[in-house]
Image 1 (cartoon, rainbow, N blue to C red):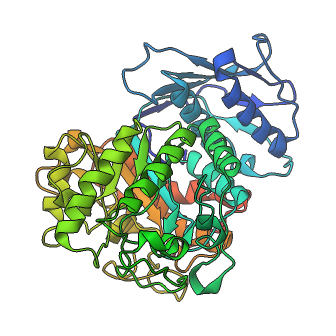
Image 2 (cartoon, rainbow, N blue to C red):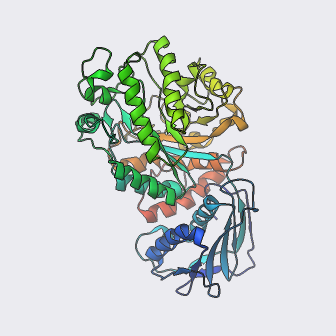
Image 3 (cartoon, rainbow, N blue to C red):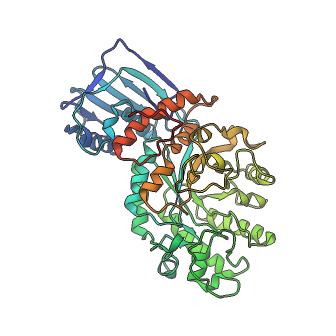
Length: 493
């Protein structure tokens, strides 16, 4: 059976009769698990054409979802048992129930990912799976600032991430090329700041209702939205909208290029901190998740003394909203961050000089870290051997094997298992302006990061992983995902 991420334990029974999904099958649920039951039933109705009613009838052949908090002390854990009569999914919490349903879908024939009815025998071999995640934070990032993606496009991406048990989506909402979120009292952010994109595209932004729709859609699929407003650099869109945010009081021209490091807020200006207080207070009110990301990377035009002052003040502003601060690892240069600030590492698997020390600083200050090494986890890197969208600055193109073969706990001295909150795979969109390109770059490498974040640590068994990846990709084909058919993997025809 092709499962990605690989579960903690799976025991099959080849002699036992399989479970068969039929027109008589029902989905049995408790009230608290009804949302997950409805999402599962809706998906399987589309592919099978069966009625699959959701209710409490326990007599018919059934898929049953339930909670048992004594199952495991690990959030997101589940047990899935398949017999001839039933599929039983028991989660230690609602995350665990969701995770079990996604494993169930990988156990079913790949055609269950289709949005159109398919006629076939819908069987699942008898098996028992005991499973739990390694890291609490398993994420992906979507840059909607360089190129804007609509609510519908983001929701499609959320569905794809959730199928691999990824549970955080980091939205990069602002950069030099665009500001993408409505903020009361600052209308020029969306009138001017949202009007641009890389290459002169039309831009766009999310209203408060749009953003809440994304947050709610993700929450139903057990994904937490992590919004990022990147400051004090990567701010030309804001600087073009409000001249008082510039040290010289002159608004910048909208920017549609791809260079980095040239912009900076006025670090010494009171207007800057009034602006940040409004932005982060409003964003926190719209974001039920625990994290707010304030960027902090590539501030090449901000003097060091100013940057350290800004890191302290900005992290205090975010912490005052009640949220946990997340920042790119450059913020670790400051010894005065808000307590518990999380650092996100984006340098290489083998750190360049000075980067590891900044990450270690977060741990010393009581925080934890998210690992996103650019040469392994960045999804916008090109694939080897083909001319296609993407970049190559992170030690050249990134193969699937490279994306699957790094170990988070051995990259940075002094940052071990208990210091790591989790892993994240970012997609920067300088070269990505539509869904097909997004999916081509994200898949299959997102599966590598999902497995690193979920599965128990062990050396990469490349032959096993590539074989399981090929099996799971049959579902991607059925779902219409435009993934890259790399020659590294023996894909099924």
